[in-house]
Image 1 (cartoon, rainbow, N blue to C red):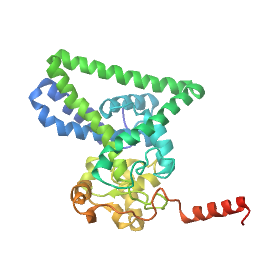
Image 2 (cartoon, rainbow, N blue to C red):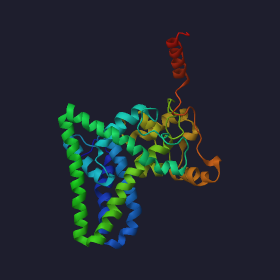
Image 3 (tube, helix red, strand yellow):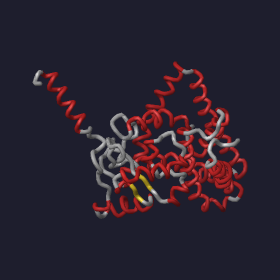
Image 4 (cartoon, rainbow, N blue to C red):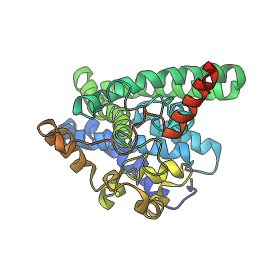
Length: 316
């Protein structure tokens, strides 16, 4: 089970050693659950990162092993990871927070407050769910093999979690068993799903979706990016979506001089502290729009639309 890139040996170490250790240790010793809660949150976020990376650049050489890895990661992420194809690969990367993107940051509000950011998951998930349903309907008609694969992912995911919950109950009884299941896998899945939406929000809100390089916000801490497998380098990822995650620091370094300074933040924690805690009391700490808003077309497009409208009405 050798990965395509040597850097992914660390991915496998996290996925097959850290993930189960954090998840199942409290099942054997429930007193470890309080200590496992923050680590389960980290596991869920990393599972989301792995799902994202794996969809852009497969981890292994063969389809069968990639499929097995997808299934394993989905257990901790919280959803069969085929959903990244219609919602992220085919939609978000195409529209990039512009009109047409199901995950636009400005659907409900053009402000960047903690209330907007923390509830963004529910807004974006509803829009993305429509894309997923359309993807399944289309696959059922045009690609029966793909449809069977996605249905199999859904069934395996559901059966695996029912079995794991049953194991926890059999091992620890109803109350403690369900508690350790919810406090480990439940927390991991909730954090994985919510965390991926949240990071998408803060990496695009108030950026210039029409700009060549100012379309995304980056978090450049070396320690932080080590822990989240370079997920902070978002500009480089959007401009090189097929690049392996290990190449993103070098790609970011080549792009950084052309990115607006406000869109290269050192720490995600520092950014959230300033924007959502201090910003709640002092507006100067909040983010401001860089360049053109995502909901405002570039001037060239607006001019073309104006000329077309005039021509259609006979005034040109």
